[in-house]
Length: 602
Image 1 (cartoon, rainbow, N blue to C red):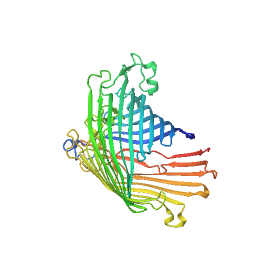
Image 2 (image 1 turned 60 degrees about the horizontal axis):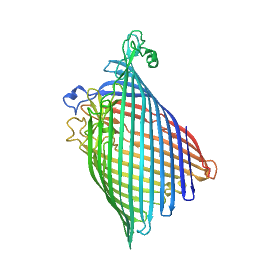
Image 3 (image 1 turned 90 degrees about the vertical axis):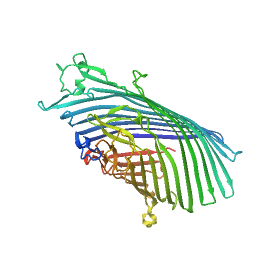
Image 4 (image 1 turned 135 degrees about the vertical axis):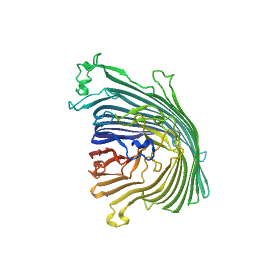
């Protein structure tokens, strides 16, 4: 179920608006197929031409999650005078996931079947408060000065992950407890992050005959800090006499079996299970908006960012020893320019250029490792990552028939220097990490269409279509990649990039029947999800299309009371990932049907 309440009002110069939302959802995915592979033996001779991978483990999954979401907003504004206003904006969100997972199947390292059960609870919270002011100075060309001070705090609490492993014994046809590093395992993770973000902006308009526009400039500062620590524990089996190892985990690991002749609790926390991250960014910008006569418009400027970042992994019990810092400092000059030419009152041509960056996140830099599946992939950061520099070029034609209707065609080109990709490596165990490639190029075109169908025939005036279709040609330069990573595929698109992406919304609206219906179709073609290295092929996700439907009915003519019916993933799309042509992951999420109502009091 889910519900939300929104309310607001003005009291003279004071304005207040608030919202509260709550939802509780249950989701189960059964019969997931998950397989993990090692490189073909011939990979030792040529890691880039290794042949099909070798099956290491083959599991069937069942997983269920209960998700609870609570959120709230409270914004207050006070208009001192028509020219001066101060606002306080508050946001709060708390999301929790209660997850249980069960899988069993063949594991090559043990040469038999295993069974794994895991319980996991995660709570995430975000709190944000922003004090903001807007000031109009009529004596200074009607300039507008705005300022803000924002403080945000985010936490992620994982208080007690519990996992148990059982191994199949064919001579007794039973599963019994297996004393492994991930069995009778408990993990406690805690993360907190704060962001302080003050900013100031100034806008000065100007008018001179057919020339008009505005000059904008400002500065901001972002100070971000994160603390993360993980504690790992195991119940080690001291002796097997008198202990029935065939019991289910809840019975086997009960209090009465934790004693010197049964199970003993030991800490297995690693020296890399804690890290601290800081990121300070000083930003300054200047911007010009210029209108020339009635047809030309120029928007351009420069932003300068001075960033200092550090992520230090350390032993939380001996913080002064074994520290592994990953400092990262950069000064970036980020120009942007757009030129717009009005072909007619309803048509524009746009040409744009911008320089942007994508910086590695704390988690991608930290050496903290987490094994999600016994026999599967462990994820670990890479402190050697550098930022990605991106050059963006766009050319766009757009036509506005009327209202919010649009027909547009765009050509784009993006140049990436040192793009960060998720890489899969077969080391002592299967490992997922992050690596910089040398460079990459994405170019293609996009078609957009948002229009009522009455231009085809007056009989179709109740129908409208909104759609976009994108074709991307992606290639990546893998020369001069780090010697520590030997990538298997030397000619491929960027990780995560599909060649085709399409979205379609078909709408029917009949005011007389107080009814509206929409179909949503979303599609993307195949894409690489994990880049293979040292003989492991890339993991490729097959193309996927999903279908959603929403119908709304207004009960009365005053538009206050509405009924809503929604169906998500009506085609029960099949998520399928392959590695070297073999199934890596396959599942269906199932369909979601919901019925709801809303009522507006005033």
